[in-house]
Amino acid sequence: MIVDATRHAIVGDAAFEVLEGMDDLYSTRGGRVVHVDLRRGVPAPEELRRLLLGPTGRLRAPTVRVGRTVVVGYDEGVFDRVLGADPAR
Image 1 (cartoon, rainbow, N blue to C red):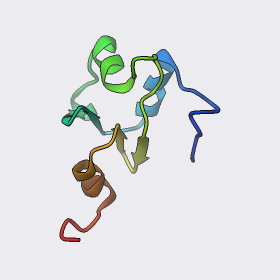
Image 2 (tube, rainbow, N blue to C red; image 1 turned 60 degrees about the vertical axis):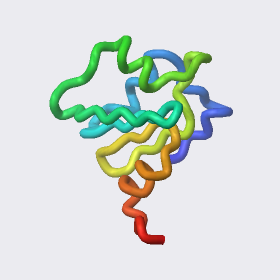
Image 3 (cartoon, one colour; image 1 turned 90 degrees about the vertical axis):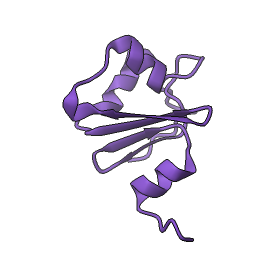
Image 4 (spheres, helix red, strand yellow; image 1 turned 30 degrees about the vertical axis):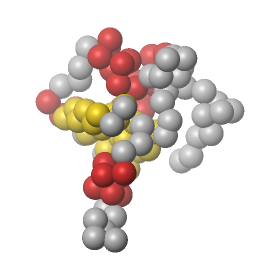
């Protein structure tokens, strides 16, 4: 399913719903990648907000769910790994 966030903004704690049924979360910001193994436990709500939301309080873009993995923000290496792209391209 594709949701156009410009038409249907995901705001505040509603962003937590993207994690339902997921095993891994990768959050990228400013060149830094944070991996959270959700099978080991979910971080505190304040930490999740920091990983998922931008300064406007909306879910950061892009946000992609692939299988049981969620990627928030863009990092080429993470996208290659999660999407199974050939790293030798």
